[in-house]
Image (cartoon, rainbow, N blue to C red):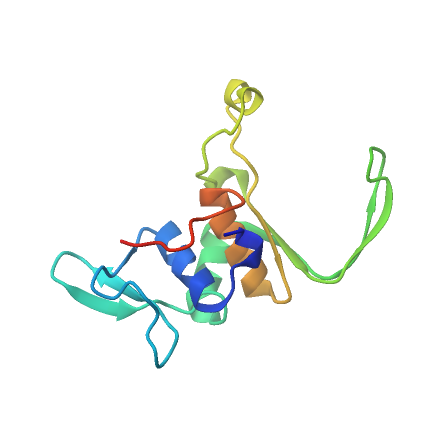
Length: 150
């Protein structure tokens, strides 16, 4: 599944996994009542509902700050030179994870030689969605598996 298409509970699940949490093996599917996923808490078998990173500032905000996620609001941007020279209008929020907090390993020989990690970028109608997509992309690249079983 493309990171750019993740939303709601599934986006939140992937953020949780990027944060080091695991999907509860006893509850691999979303809760039928809430649509939320459950996370394993330690090895004791207890579970907790996955935080709403993409819609709750108390959950997603600290990640934006800690991972130094740069945010750009909808609007026009001017590029100087190159194939994208000129004005480009974005109708959505854009987010980029700081180079210092990316964890995705180099994806080609050039990145390997320069010891550079791929950029984690995200876009979305809202700030939190864009930032959380960038967070997931910075860990997994452009795609994640359909289901993230613990």
